[in-house]
Image (cartoon, rainbow, N blue to C red; front, side, top):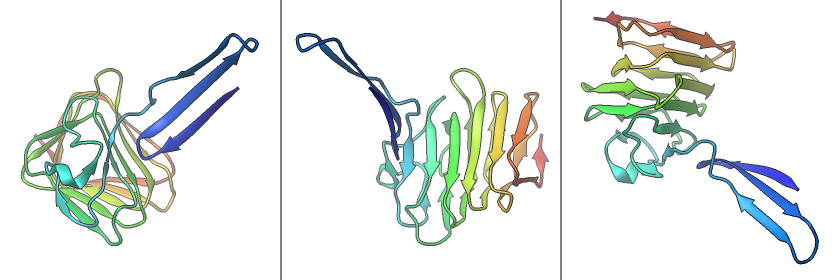
Length: 171
């Protein structure tokens, strides 16, 4: 039989093949999404290991998820230049990713991703797109504000019923 399970660490797929009593094989595949989840109860700095479950996401292809850890709006300060392949916002309380340093979206292959599953959020830190990027804002009532998007020759695709606001493209 086959089944999947999803938690804050990603989605897991398990396959079991049964060919009689003497020949039972079970395999557990790696998660389809490996990443880190913001675990601080409020605002904090991106580079602090204690603010993340699964390690600080700072590499091409790294996945950063901002979910239900906070009980109010929170600001995540980009206190050093950081890189991630995907960012997911999934909380009704607003997250703002801000700071004087650069946040670079760089997938190890394919497109980089910003995903808003719930709530309205903002990225105010300088956002550099190193790869084609898909921005999905799923709920119709949600907004993602990008207030410091760097000029880039890559394609940006917007999906979902929500809104993306780009306040300033920096060259």
